[in-house]
Structure formats: structure tokens, C-alpha cells
Length: 120
Length: 111
Image (cartoon, rainbow over the protein chains, first blue to last red):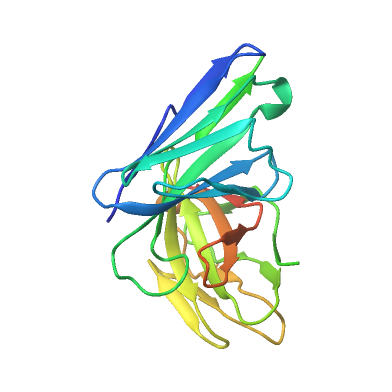
């Protein structure tokens, strides 16, 4: 099956620094990528949707200037948490939707393994 | 709004036990329903899905039936194995690929 690589798998940073998380589709072209965040014992919450070559669409309540999303190519999307603070500590996970001709919603989505961010 | 509620874990069972993980949803229209599984150190993988009422999704011995009358999509397996230890997410989606997840249920299977 399709593989999505997400790096790093975990990161610890100081408050005020920026952290970049990469999401790569390894064997297919990802026209759309989704970024989710999960706090402990909470649901995975969609943060934003990015389409290759265009600006990301952010969900209500997600600060676009804090969570910078770039989807410059069909195989790479990045999420940068700018000026991170302890409340940004969370599990971030990406998913990629590819040009595979598979019908329906959800089944053509492939997920990365996630990034655990801890801000001190 | 749309939401998914699933039973809280962790759930701990002995090998070969019967498994049920409850999931109910709230949604407008007729969403597709999914169960995703996340094994340790790996990304989420689609386990099974159902796209309309009374559909039964099945995979790897797991089953779930789309029950519109009870707005439920409970996950079941007749005889679990240690290798089934993972986190299971119930989810729904309309056709825009945006998925709404439950909180996840961690499953531990003891040998």
C-alpha cells in the first residue's frame, strides 16, 4: 500500500522556537494533505487542508500565522509551529490523499506515523 | 455538528477473547463510517469501512455494521490475538475527505 513518511517522530524544543514537521508521500502523488492534532485523551482534530501549489485552508480556531503549512510539491507538505509554547505540545499527524482513482471518502487517505511535540 | 463517540480505553483482554469496541456517531445526512487502527510506531491504517446503512465492513477477522437506527458502528472480533494490540479509531466522513475521528481506544491483548 501507499506509504506516507512523517518526520520527526518526536521533538522536544524550548518555548519560543519554531519546529518544522515534514510529511512525504513516498510512492504516490498527494494532491491533498491534511494535518491533524491530538491532545491526550482527545480526538484527532483536523487543523488544515492543503492542496499542492495553493494556500492551506484552516479549520475554525486554528491560527494560520502560528501553524504554517506549505505544500510546494506533490510529495511534500510541511507544518511549521512558530514560536512554540507549552500549550502547543501535542501529537501531530498528517494524511495524504493521492491520485489513485479510488472512489469514496477516507479510503484513499494514507496517514503518517505522527509527531509528538513537547515544548518546554 | 458531526461527532464520533467511542468507548474509552484501555481495553485489556486475554488472547482468544471476544472483542467489542462501541462507537456511536452524530451526523447530518449519510456519512461513510470507518475503523482505523494504529499499531505501535506506525501510521493510521484503514481497517474497514461501510458506506451505507446495514453495510457490514470486515477485515482481518474484524467486523462492524452500519446501524443507522442506533447511529452505531461497533467493532467486533470473535477471537483476538496479541498482534491485535493497537489503538483503534472510529471515524466518519462525508465526500470531502475530511474525517472526523473518535478519541481512540487502546487495546491490550495478553498472551
